[in-house]
Image (cartoon, rainbow, N blue to C red; front, side, top):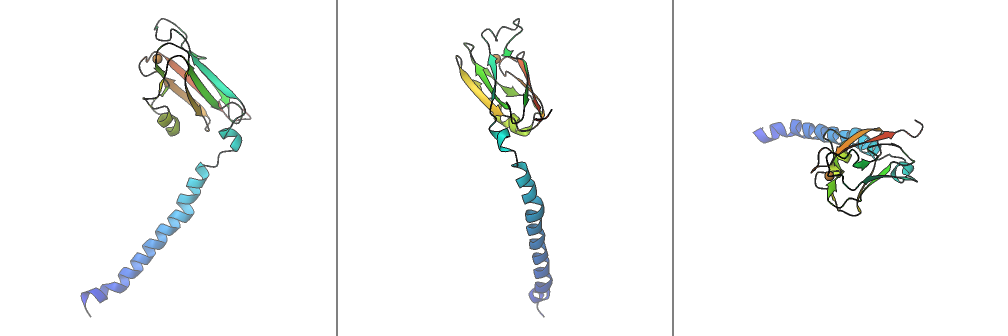
Length: 153
Ligand SMILES: [Cu+2]
């Protein structure tokens, strides 16, 4: 018996078992988790109302108390969880997620999402309850919070 044929049998079995394990993982573990993640109610994705936060004129002034208005906002999933930031100031600002925010918000509200002066917008539809903290990258004293509640809360 040659070396090759001696190992061919066991190797085939190992390969087969490994393939089945991979398939089983994909079908029964990976796919259910992947599917569960996208199972967000339609009204959470397209809520009937919008929540507006304005970045007001003079926000660059560190002594001015107000910049993101309102500074803290509470929204409900399926009602008004689409938040729109409007920059009505005359200079550029950002809406930048503090580190540690929910991954998706942190990605979307990246450091480079500059809101143009005189009406630039950024919007994000929250789909997870929680507290979200953000700031303005060039003006770190500008800080805001979005609180996202379950619809029945
Ligand atoms: Cu700013």
